[in-house]
Length: 114
Length: 115
Image 1: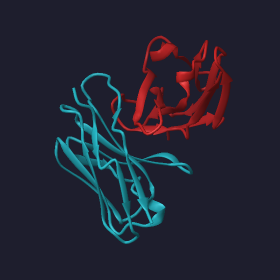
Image 2: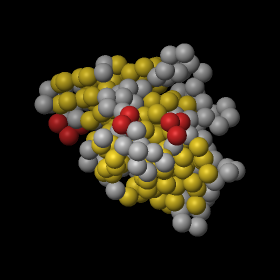
Image 3: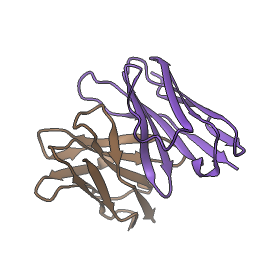
Image 4: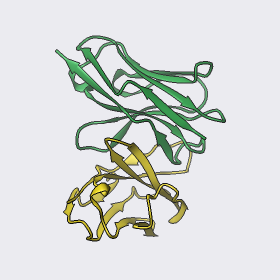
């Protein structure tokens, strides 16, 4: 059974450019989460969805960040315009609300903004 | 609001020694607590979790943790460290005290194991 799939694994872009990170959750999972990991702030919850609907986006840093989940098998996190301080590893995770379950993480996208 | 504090950003032990990684939580209701491990260039993997019931929880790779309500702690232990245990460890609390929903993570503890 495939796990959570994120693409790309690495992204290097210049300040001001648009960046789109992609995530495919585990089939059948109805929760999807976006986290950001930095040395300074650790793992921060950015936003999460339940049944494709955003439930809490209070962790999104600012209006430059947006996330969508057009269907149960795909989500994107977009940064426009990107800034050097956005450099981090972005993780997507999914889980199921059926019974007691755990978060399953992808391998992350390492974003570098120069 | 739920929060987690991990004491010590870096712990070093010798191979075969006891591993103790400390975690304290703050929660307005009985918490669901988790330990995750992250190996380099990988996502997080669940080590163990406490939801209800027995307060001593056993996880993978010989790790265990004990939920102590009176101390608001959920420390992670392993009797004998192995070189392969070197990784970053995260304690987490469930945002809504429901498994499967958003987790709030501590800042992590890097475990180094020397031979």
